[in-house]
Image (cartoon, rainbow, N blue to C red; front, side, top):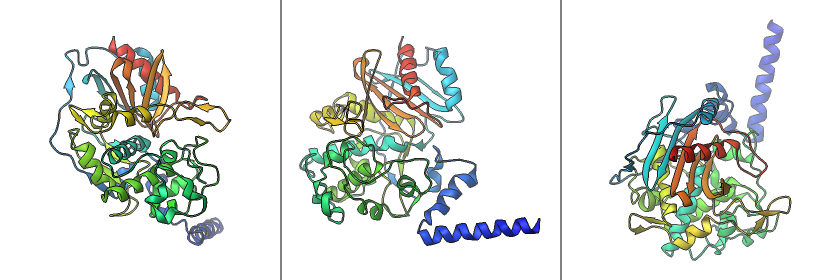
Length: 383
């Protein structure tokens, strides 16, 4: 028994020594937030363990509620999906009115949860706002015009559009299950700026779609340099307040008072997340206020002229929005890890919001099985 404890102690010391010598001290934070709290990875309420900046709200604008609010029942097939994937919120908005919403696992209209990569679509919107205001010339402007510390070697080739369309050519590996990978370091680490500035272009930008969270983080820094504001401040001023969000939101940072994790981690609720869908369905106009140029909205929700990694045309991504088709309908949507969705179906003037703890099987077309199930359910709710 004593011999076993001795070996365990030696292993413990060696592991700690390895972490310290490798410079991966952020692993301590990752372990304390996940494994030591009974989670194998990130989760939708882990935001409480990270520092954050506030996206301030303003004068609330209530959502209209349909006369048929919650009169429909969810179809039977989606109930098992919601159970197995632990859906916490499901909402269907038609013609700018809430038709249906339901919450589970103690969540409510006011419960905050992590957007994960849905925040990428919000960052894209802020790029659009900055272009409309003239603070950024166009999507073709070079990244190095804003981020000189990033500007070495072939990095000078990268444009804002390359970042928006996930075609930067940077040496980034998007891996949510590698505890010592770049994505984990960005999520749990304490130096986003240093991590981004260490990246190098290794493939020609603007050719091949490769989903990189680093692209959105660089866009976040560009917004801040162009506007002279933190991205939380700019989001509050240009989106959260004009769109009348009910609550302030939190945007997690790498350290206290540090950089927002733009590639993820806006923490809000289903109704306030849905406002981005309404803005885009109305071509950037919010109740008469033109927040985004309609041409930017069109570009953001149209497929970029890129190839996938197999050399085939990529048709499922625009400017930080995913694109799909279902039941003959064209769809664009914001997507976050574990199945966070704000889905826009223009032909139906419909927004579908789903928040939850797990997502479904990843399909060869780049979407998830549950994504299609939630669309099918929403279309049935409509009837």
